Image (tube, rainbow, N blue to C red; front, side, top):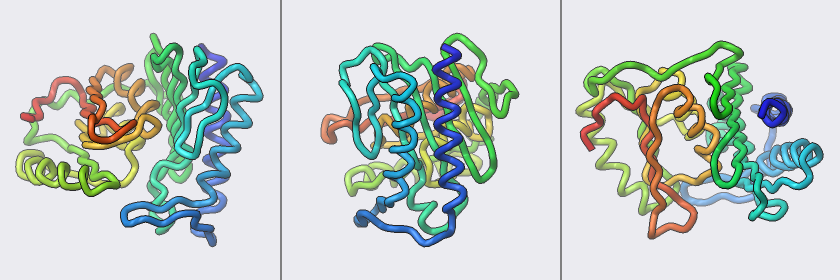
Length: 248
């Protein structure tokens, strides 16, 4: 799988460098909704990633936030969020990333998350220890919720926001601290390397968390994802170090 991982790293770093170079510069807004923004640079970043990956693996498919390419029934499918944290990016908040995962027959086998501002690169492949900038890492060992840092995501729809607020209120009282940082992929990466102890979200897309999923699991943690019956292609997720009792 090393050649798949190398290709994902190459694509993520190229897209991340483009995002870093254009950060805090004038941006074209393609779409603006009540709780979200879509930028032209999101599309450009995914096009760069698509060209890089499918040039090397033309039989593969790509499933991304900015569109799909190829036969989605292909044995190999790249799952891509070219800019996770678009609203942060737009407002000049330096907390965003590129997320790329590879699925083989629906199983995630490679994951890469790149934060171009902090120059942090998380990599994982099935059967190997994950790395942050070439250093192996593991999830935290904290088991007591009162000592934990928990990220609670509030998603982009009224339904999921309403579901998330009571959970946030509960965690604010029970955990040491709660965080809402605006990038699901980085939340997953932070759980994987022990900065956070858990990440919980009521409505998330696969491209937001696919790479983080393999990071958390290869780092010794656990991920529970359930499809939402009321929202197509959206999931509820609990990612944690696997030992903490979230009392949910």
